[in-house]
Image (tube, rainbow, N blue to C red; front, side, top):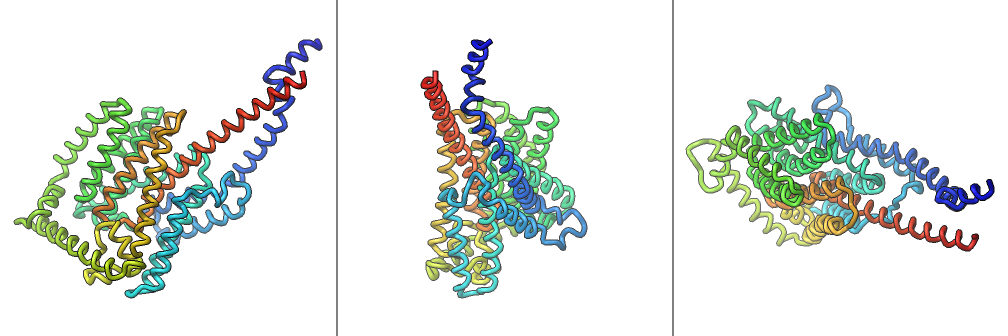
Length: 451
């Protein structure tokens, strides 16, 4: 009996009970407490993502009069403050891109206070934009597992798919779906931009779905979003889709050895262009010359107007290189009541050259994070798919930013945050493995000394 008891105590279970039991129990207790405390904050964070991406106020009567996004953001911050000290991450753990984003917000506030055009308008534009930094920080601190990250990405992707379906149904007779949905979706180019940034995530969910029903749902979502993009007749959105889609097919179709995705994408693109691409074709023709149709004339005028806005933006940057004309104030300064349709010029003319440099550094960090993840060993299959989707989404932003004023839209900042979260989780996993290996070595050494 004694020998069997001794053998059990010297086995793996015995080592755990003798040396690691109390530590494991303590770790489990802390993990449970942390999960319970952060659950409320994460709930309100998901509420903010749902409200910002899904715009329920546009569909539920009475909700539009409530500041839902502000309420969700305030409750998220409050819940986070109450849980400080119990999160596995601290503010000092924020990566470099978080510091870049904070510096952008601070400089934009300085620009608004010294705006030569309209201080009040610039200030409130900056206040609205500053929310993205708060959400960025809260997302980084609270999203400590792939399950939570999937939930946020799901909310963004599913929301854009539902918005696209609603826009198609409500805007059957509305040219380019213009103004069918409120918020940033009201502009056809902005809607196309949101679609391009979200389709890669839909494909990642499609490839990770286990049931045929979910796979079918994500196929429908991709088709609906693609139809909505073509109906917007956004030239920038289509170019963006072709380039970002090429990166996506390279990641998932060529490198992932799924040739059927390339065939399916080609068939979908051909069907969309044949069925609903006539307006898009006319708008592309309008780049080069005016035509006999009003649509082509309008497209040509739009092209000429955007070229003139770029010239005036460059002139304004040369005149106000340090702090710009103030966030959102170029619309007034230009005299044309339009934003310059290049995000890089938009942020430079609004906030100055230093802000534009920080802006570029911020998004460069997103690609740096993806390079780190691509070199990380032992990533699970699901994480690898989302890394590929994030790369395509970021490429979509970099390309789309050349043709659209998207400097203040939140989606690109969310994408960089997703890369930061995945990097942090990979580092934490490596650190945990190192600590576990040291603990195991220590237990073995203590056992050798005892027996």
